[in-house]
Image (tube, rainbow, N blue to C red):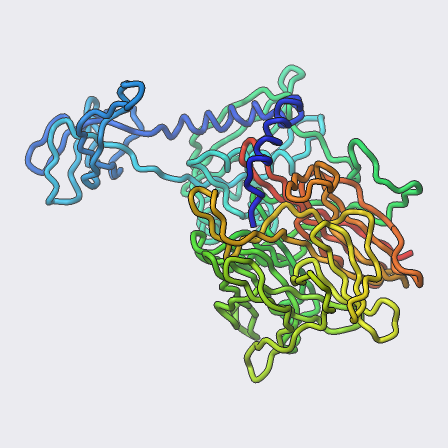
Length: 608
């Protein structure tokens, strides 16, 4: 799935840039930029020359005080002819040939001694040496506040992680150091002890730990940081940065900024509980009881990882992960449900590999750790729906040649230890309409034993069809507007000028729930620039959830949640005795900085 790539999209973005003030497009982050710049200066790229060759020994013009030490490995380069720009005629550099690597044996006051690792290579004076590109991994500790001014420490840590992640040589693992410290009953001082660092490095690979703190200096806020080695706990750098843009605490509940919702008599059905942010794009998530203990786990996916979390005191703590090839795989969706009937929910991942699907299913096994593949390389899309009062239904659909979808939606059954495609899902025959499994559900709306089909159409309207194909409901309002595209099987040639097949707009979940004796249909609501009138152009400014109450006469508007920044990726509603828990995933993509983050917001929906 990708954002639409066409000239109109680019023109719109340019126009947006011209009419929107710069301070409305980005939050000030000068202090974080200075922090990262200071850390970057500690790891400068190293470059030098071979100044003498004596047998197998090399003398390099790298001396004490430079970022070089015994044991470092450097690339050995043979420089060739000079290269000139064909139009400007200016020199752009020299041709380079990689000869292998050299190892630094000793660093002296004015030079270094080294040797070539490949004995067949014959270095000569004038050859170059250069440090190889190395990615450094940082963990960010929970910020310590030594000031009377209230600071949103969660937001500060998230901003630090996001800014570090944007540097091409730096990365922040998807690991919550703060939660780990709580679980191990450690503070930052005890965390940096040798035995605890060894325990930490068995959980996550990291080079450094950033320890931020905030204090007041002569009435101004200062961001202090210590950069500590994750290997031995030694202090590498410490500095203070004056800052005027530290994040203030969150309001007790999320509120809409700007235009209010369209309800004349707005009644908040949802109570905001909290939110958790991830410094990467979460593609989809679902919830289910994976081990049969009666408790729900959360399953989140990005492009190549399946991450399992447990809800611990309102925050998600990762307990397991299934990692696949980052290069080959491109996850599209995840669904969780007990299809094989053994009391443990399976995980079904729709996965694109090249121009086809290689979807798979995972499950736990009693008394065994981790997750096991129980279905692999299925050339199918998956989606689970759960009509009220019935068992979950696993739907499947095949990709086509040069088109993302082909053929009918089919149910999947588990029989004799194997998942099999069964009969066609009972969808109506509607002229000119090809149903796809995304943005579709089924429900007996009238209690007469007849199942209706509920879909989001290609123009973002809600439609309800009877089994014989009669259109029962068509909304005047727009829903959905997901900016992502499914391009399985679609091929582009000549830089996108010639296209074979057309991508299909992704459509989010439609879920029926029963809360407080009433039945509701929940729909994703992405507020699109153009208010739904631009069919192919989808630029989401903010998003929310729409609730329709099911009455004897059809649907009526019940509630629309406050608009929040980013597009709504998906949501789940988990009913309980006193109402329901509502979980909403939003993705915020910064088209200017090419950054992306995800926010999982939690709400409580009390029964009336």
